[in-house]
Length: 142
Image 1 (cartoon, rainbow, N blue to C red):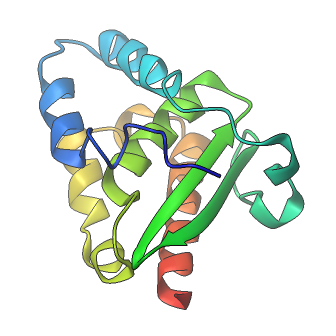
Image 2: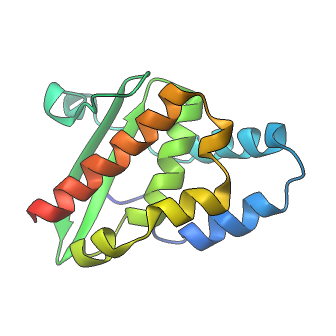
């Protein structure tokens, strides 16, 4: 598992907020989110196991982690393009951070600034919350 994703490294949550604000409509924003998902490296097929599977998501979503010093590095994947994009949004906020920063991050405010949850189906919104919960649970246990 390597940390070769730009999300949480060269692309931050603030970058996502700023970039999405340039788009006029949600169709353009969705396209951008899907394009971000294409930048996420594929997860090792062996890591796509029940232990890493996120419950509560409409699509299949896997989150794996490792510690790099004090920072947590996440590897993610999904079988749906839009969900990989949503994972990129989440990774921008949480990847390569220390557990205290992960737990202190105001994800509700982040999602509110993006306006994302009100433009997703209820099941996709629940899935995003399940992704965040898993990452926060990992940080809490570390």
